[in-house]
Length: 271
Image (tube, rainbow, N blue to C red; front, side):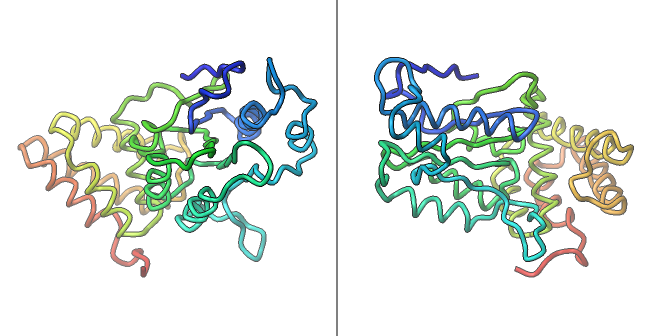
């Protein structure tokens, strides 16, 4: 995990993934990094005395932008951060800061970004605008695409959910997240992006999916919004994939099957 150098602000990474058990903990660390990045003082930063530090403390710094799940007209939070929210960041990040030397974007619950949003974020992280810093607050970074994680430094706070689950579990969780969105086009995109893994990795991925679904069915793990019926369907599909892999069915065929059959026809949403 990345170690933040409080004395060398010119060499901060352009993006950090901040993992903690609670959103409050990751947000606190994000604000600390924002203070370091925006401080106008000399020596140890943040100084707590300069204009930027005072405005951050008062919550009136215009160059600090927080993004999170939006709420509906009933005040209920949406399940995901959507692609339009990330596109808005991309447009705003191209505009110079109002006052501070940097613009800082804090994405709360960044691990709830849907696949389309993560791909939009990836484009932003690959070619970040000058003077922009992105802080992704998460409980489980394994739910982020590997390509997104590779563009960020990672910071773990305490006993954060950044446990070394391995690539197979990361893929399994990302797949289930894609399915939980019930958007077939997004699932197709995810499968196309990951169908290049080898046969052994595909077997480990399917085993991880089976284990996670089993935990969900037994209430040992949060169900990610799936019904019992949906979990049973996915369990059966994983079993089929496992049988096919044992007789050397191609990995692309397996991912094609997942893309087509993971979401029952009656539950596929209109684009």
